[in-house]
Image 1 (cartoon, helix red, strand yellow):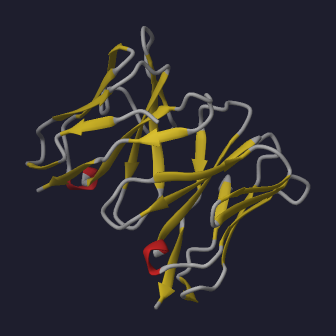
Image 2: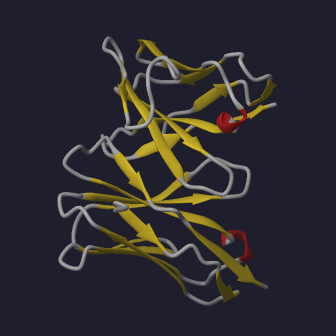
Length: 111
Length: 114
């Protein structure tokens, strides 16, 4: 059983729309969650992390965590073509230093 | 976040040979990690490297195939031994952040085995 699951996409949204990326996890011991953006041919770049239930906002990005439902999401407001990338969700838990990565969701923002 | 560099950035190697990948960080870090990312796939953790102790390998990865060194708090190497075409992949090192939980990635090493 995969620890972290994501829809592989692609998710296509028009420029200026809200992109919603979702992730579920199986290990209830997971306590920290991370969203990475990966452009083609580049390494993953950390954009958000969340530890507590609820929402965490940073600029155009909002991470949401619902531990009861074992669900993590990333909302990107006012999506731009430069947001087109693969978004990786990662979870860490009882061993904070060990991450479990989802397979990634490819986002396409159309001008 | 720390500045992380990897050498080489890419290489083409013949099967049966070995390649050592270096990871250098501009500040001292506790944990360093080595991942593999095969084409179109997500990241798979190979091992965790702490300074002064043996690396901890994930299921499916063994020390004889992927020996790791961690001589100090800013440097680590991963060797891919006796390579086969199946080892063609991007190899990434990462380090733990100042908060202790997040990880930051180096630019990666793209390895092609012919």
